Image (cartoon, rainbow, N blue to C red; front, side):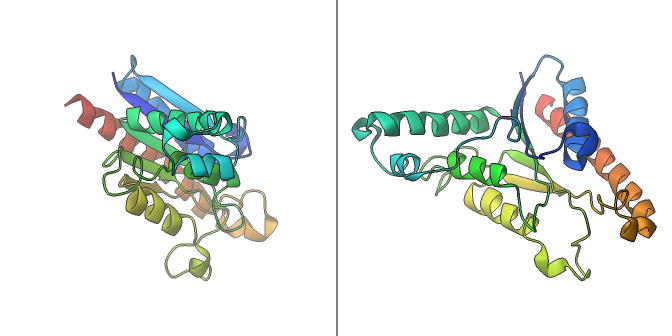
Length: 216
């Protein structure tokens, strides 16, 4: 049976979160293709992971046989997260832009799940796994826009997920999500609505295509 790893990181609930709406559309389409499959859902806002500390970091670079009890406990979480990633046939990650970058909770997941010699390094254990990143943002940081130089979400995640972990990364980018609530952006509401509908459609299409490929 197929397994989907779904990671949400928005601090807002689905009704007020652009990224959660898109990941939910992805999940719905996926489950239609794999009704008996498994969805591993990590809600990093509702259940945040601890940030990587010296104990957990040192455990990742030492022989497990030499771990102290504290290192054993810290490394057990990292192994659990790595195993979830390795079990997944596909991954969808919500990465809303907060202050020009990803939420700290998502960074905590990355720091914990990246284990050199396992999920990262010369032969990453989840290499080639398709990952769809929902990179929502309140404005537009697209090429040619004034804020293009401040785009630190897609650039960073492409580097770490693909370059560091060997994952097959694709992006869905709902933008201008602040337009409905910001009077100064009122004229951009139609563009926001177009972007939102495109993102929802892309999520459904990508999820269906990935599910069908696995079934083939």
